[in-house]
Image 1 (cartoon, rainbow, N blue to C red):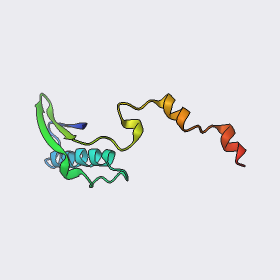
Image 2: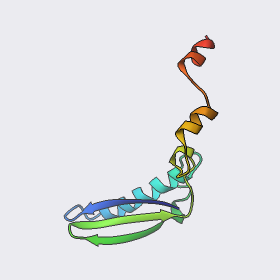
Image 3: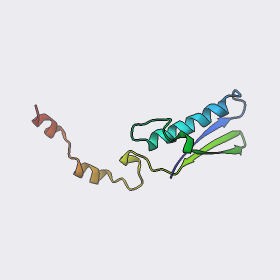
Length: 95
């Protein structure tokens, strides 16, 4: 499950809450999408509003995993380097 939230301070323009919701939906959709499509899964994002002392927190969540491996909880950068060796010497060898 992916989560993302943004805070809208009190006293911001009236359209800020709606624009912030659109941002949260677009962010979660693009993280879950293989081609970073901010609209692909936007409709699947559940939005909650939490009233805080100085504004409102827009919280979104979607029942998908991030598409990029490095964003997943089980990502191991050392294993990734070992599985995908790319170093300056290997780049230079191709010249």
